[in-house]
Every structure is written in C-alpha cells, then in structure tokens.
Image 1 (cartoon, rainbow over the protein chains, first blue to last red):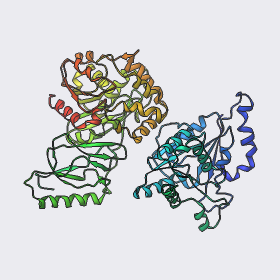
Image 2: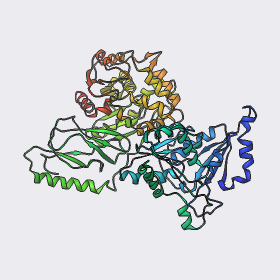
Image 3: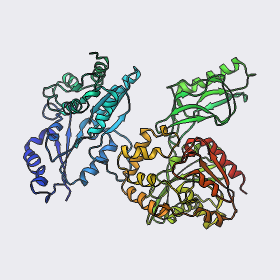
Length: 253
Length: 377
C-alpha cells in the first residue's frame, strides 16, 4: 500500500508529530532497512488567505530538520504533478507542501505520467548578477522581482529548490560561484529556516565567491497576523526582494 | 505595403504555437547588401533562439524592429529595397509596419493548430499540419526529437504545400511503447499517418533515424512516395556517435544532458536552457527511457555499428522517385563523409551546420526539399 494522507493545514501537524517524526521517519533506519514507509502526507501551508495565526504557517523547516523525511514544495502545476508521482513511488515518508495561494494557478501539464527526481533544483530564470534561492510560493514573488530588476539592468538567476530535503547544493553553489551575490527568499520565520540553511551552506562552501554579504528575505519572527493590513506586510513581497537585491549589488567593503 | 519594389522582412513563425519573437541582435545594418541565406538578425522566442536568414537579396534600407522589442509573427521588422525607392516611400511603409508591431498579437490570432492523432496498430500517433493547399509533405524527425524539430521549416513550406509533422512512437505525445524497437514500428507509424491523411502519394522528409523510417516506407511501396529528402540519414555507413546515442538515452539530469545535446549542433549556443529543459521533460515521461534504449539496440545499432542498410533501401527504390541527401558539414553524430557513399541520389553538404541542418541552416534545407519535390512527377 502506498497511502496518500491529506492532513489539511500544516498548522495541525502537531497533533500527530510523534507518528511522523519519531515513527515514520525512523522505521527504515531502526529496522535495518527491513521496513519501508512509503507514505505521502499532503498538507496546506502559507499565509495570504486571512486565515490567522493557526492556519497560515509555513513550518516546512521543522520537517526539513528531521532525517528520514523528504520535504517537497512544488511551485508550478507541472512540478506538482511530477513531484507527487515521485513522492508516491518513493519508499520513504514524503511531506508534500501545497501553498494555499497557488491552488488556482494554471500552467501546462502533460496528460501522461512523469516523475521529477527529488533533490534537483530548477533554474527558473537565468542571470549573471545575483542568485536568488527560493521555494514554493516565493518562487513567483522572486520572479516578479527579477522581472522588475531586469528592466533596471540587473539580471537575477532564480533557483527554485523544489525539495528542501534532499537539497540540491550543487545548483545553488554553482550559481553563486557565477554571480558572487546571494539573496534567499523564504516565507517562513527567520530563525532556523531555509534562508538560514542556504546562507550557511553558501558561507561554508562558496565563501570565496561572495562579493557581498548574503541577504535574507523572510517573514518576521511573529505569528501570522489576522489583520488584513498586517498580514499583507507580513508576507515577503517583490519590493522587499528588489530591495535586498539592490543591497547586495550596491554593497561596497 | 503595395509597392512591390519594397520587400518586407517578416518576423518568422518558428513552431506552430509561436506568436511573438524578440530580436536580440541585428546582424545587418541599414545600407548593407544581403544575399539569400545571409544572416539578418538573432531572434529569441519562448522556445528557441535562432538566426533569421534573408529570403530575398537586396539592400537593407530600413530596420524597423528594435532590439529587445516583442514583434508579432509576420510583423515587418525590416525593409529591403533598391536605391530608386525614395525615403518618403520607405517612411510610409515603416509607419505601417510600426503600427502592426505596436498593436501586438491580434486577439483572433490562433494558437497552435489542434493536434491530430491516428491509431496505428494500437498505438496513438500524434501529428500536426500546416498549410491548406498543395501536395502533402510528411516530416519525420530523428531519435529523441519530435514534430517540433521542424519549427523552422513547417510554416515556410506551408505556403505551397500541406505540411504535416508526426511524433514517432516513443517520442513527443505519441504512444511511448516501441515494441522491439526495430524499424518496422517506426515505418508503420509513417504509413499509418499517410493513411490517416488519405494521402495516396506524399513527399517524405526524414532526419537521421527518421530518414531510415522514410526509406523503409519508400522501399516497401515506392508508388506511395513522390520524393524523398533525407537529412543526415542513418544507415549509409557503419560509424555513428555511440557516446551521443547512449548518453542521450542514459542522461537523467540537465547537467548530464546538456553536453550530449550540444553535439547535435555546429553552434552549441543554440542549446539554451529551455531546449534542455524541454528535452528533460520529455525524457521523464513514463516509458521514454525504455523506448530510447530499445531504439538504440533495435533500429540504430547492431553492436557498435549502425544496423540500417540505407543503401539497400535506396537500391530497392531503384530511382523511381527523386531522392536528395542533405548533410551538415560539421555533423558530429553521423559523419558527413558518409554522403560520398550514397549512390543514386542528389547530394548536398551544408556549411555551418552539424547534425541538425534543418535547424541551423533551414533556408538551404528548404531549398533542397523544394527542388527535390520539383523533380517529382
């Protein structure tokens, strides 16, 4: 059996956390490879639907932290289908994160079956000046910013990680080695999130290539506000990405 | 533009779904003399980057489309005219062309024509057509390609012919099952599409492995075929690039695929990220891996040498129809030297092209196809 469980809001994951991170994630390891857990757990994440603090969190960093779990965050319809098929075929537990604000997005999807490998980032825009590493809904925010910046003469390379575990380190490092500048855009809270993880990776393995300090664009370290005006301010927008890119391109020692 | 001394240079339609193109660089300047086939401008579309070649000779009097500007397909981007045409006359034509560019893509512009399918021996075979009048041309792509390989040729040929391009089994949107992977499966698909079109007789244009399929169809029933144009055809010698064939079948990532695909072209800059991503998306469809490997060990290779005997197929046709062989001089997949061994066919070797002359030098390949057709009875 290859169950696909839909657990609604990722915010509710706390009530079954033991089964996910202590049981499912550990089976293969603790039974010496004799047991597999080919389960897919679908869940909805992210702010923007006026759903307040308990229905709007991102929380994918929590799962990325656990060895034994695979964490998938599609940003396009094409990727959603290919990554879901791969998730079902995978013998390990897969956390499949779907951003609420992306459900009404349309895009080309082949009729046929296809699988996208985990751990392969997608370079969704090429550019030589600044690398923007991002995931999930923020891919579109970053592309929007990159479009605005291109009109002003700054070419950004936008990398959609697609899976945060496993992580495609090579694509990130190769890009930064070309551009020398990194902005990480992550909708989750700023402590111990994907932005800090990618920043640490690049600081350790591509330090010599960096021509400016790394910038992170994230939500603030607060619960997601219920106030419409505050929620809009909470979610990273294209303007903040543009500002971060300008900071790294304008930096002088 | 009613003055027929002024020849408009139009934004080409590369691929049936193309609506807009962007000029990334002009190769010529106002005042330059150009001959047919000279490079005019580099153009970028959603799918591909290419170089527009001059379809007419003369003096480039006006460049209308700016670098970086989106131009609707068939919009006039430059004017070629002799010296006797006055500046006032040219300015009027520029004004007209400018209005078309500024208007953008018309709302009623159709997208890609609907894909048609035929059931051939239980396999779904896809094909798409362009052109409403004239004789039927069927374009047959090579190993790992699909009907879009003909994007620089299908629309231009459609001015005079009904031009169809199919997806061979294992490719594009056709069924991915290729059975034993031997040539019969491919030849049946070609014949099946001709049947579906109700084409009693048709001109076949085949590339590489697709040329082998076209030859097999013609050899089996020469009366069915009016002419054959074979582009970098397989089977005219033992040698073929094994690293390419197996590397393409085995590649799992963009990093592995890109250098392999680069070998197809004389100018590797044609292999954009979009080209590689599209190929990767194709390779990841269920069944494609098996199909590509089966075609390598079935149709293409016998051990480490080519399996097909195209000279024998050509002999079976016995000069019943005109045949032209076109090769890119810099072909790194099947060496152009194999053209020398082809007997009983017109032979052309195209400069500045690798294994894909129909993408790198489309105007010359188009001329070869049209001249071959003109010789048919």
